[in-house]
Figure 1: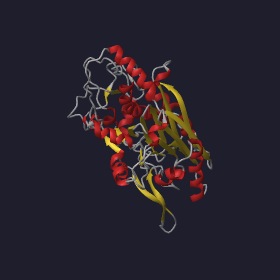
Figure 2: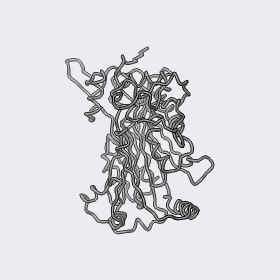
Figure 3: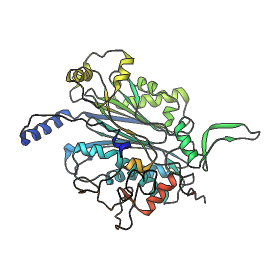
Figure 4: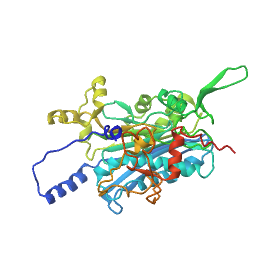
Length: 433
C-alpha cells in the first residue's frame, strides 16, 4: 500500500471545539462561497473522423443534491476506426462512478477517485475488447470538483494547466514509445518488440512502434489485435488550484504535434474559453496544416469574484516554476497568504505505474465499514463474487511477500487473466482474425 498512499499527502487541522451545527452551516456557507465557476468551449477540425469528446457539467456526487455537482471533460482520439472512441465516450464515466463506494463525503470521494479511475479504464477496455472489434483509442479524462482537478490518461491526448502567473504545466504523461523510455522498457520486458517500419532496401521510417500490431502508443483502450502489454491503466494526477483558478487545455495529438504546451497556452491567453479553443485549433493548423483530427477543449476555472485575478503578479518565472506545484505541507500561515496571491498548485496525488496491484492498493478486512467496497466484488468489473471465487489482486504477485494473498481488493477470474496478460505473465491474447 505504501507505494500508493505514500504519494498522497495528508493535512491535519487542529481546531478549538465548535458545536457541530455551527461547523455544518459554516461548511455549507463556504461551499457556496468557495465554488469556482466553470466556463468551457471546444473546437475541432476533422480529417479522419476518429476524435470524440465529452463535456458534462451537471454530474452529481450525491444524486439529487445540486451542491454536489462536478464536471467531466474528456477527449478520445481513435485509431484503426472510431468504434473504441465511441464506446469509451459512452461507457467510461459510468464505469468510473460505478467503482466508487457509495455515501462518501467530498474529501473521501476525491481520495477514492484515483483508484476508481484505474478500475473504470480497465473495465471499459475489457468490455470493448470482448466485442471483437479491433480499433483503439486514447482517453484523457478530467474531473473538476470545486478547486480540485483529477486527470486520468492513456495515450497522447494531453491536458495542460495554465495559471494566472503564466507557468504552464502538464497534467498528463504522453504514452508514446518514441518519447517514453520507461514505457519502452516495460513493453520489451513484457515480451513486446519495438522497432520502426522498414521499407525496401532496409531504410527505417516513421515513429517507434510495438509489435505485434504496430501501434506507436504504449497505453490505450481497445486494440485487441496488439500485444496485451499495451495497457489501459491510466496515469493519474490530482491537483488543487489556488483561489486564483486556472485554465485547462485538453487536446488530441493533432494539436500537440503542431504546438508545444507553452505555445498552445500563449496563443489563447486573454480570450474567453470558446474563442480560446478555436484559436488553439487555428494556430495548430497554421503551423502544420490539417494532417490529423484536431480537437481542443478549453476549461476555465474562475474564482467566484474575480478580485483574486487582479492582484499584481510577480514576473519571476524560476520562482513561479518552483511554486507551481507545492506538496501539501504544514506551512506557516504567513507563507500561505503570500503564496495564494500567486497561483500555486497543490499536488494531492500522482501515480503512473502500469501494475494493477499497485494501483488498486489494499483493502483492509477489519470492519469493512463506511465507504469500503463490498468485500467480494471484483475491483475492476464490479461483479459480485462467491467467497470461493475471488482471487486477491496481490496473490502470487511480486507483492505476495509483503501483503497477504487473502487481502483485498479481489478480482474475478476473467480480470485476473487480464491482469496477468498485461504484466506479460501469460502468452499475449492476440486474436487476429
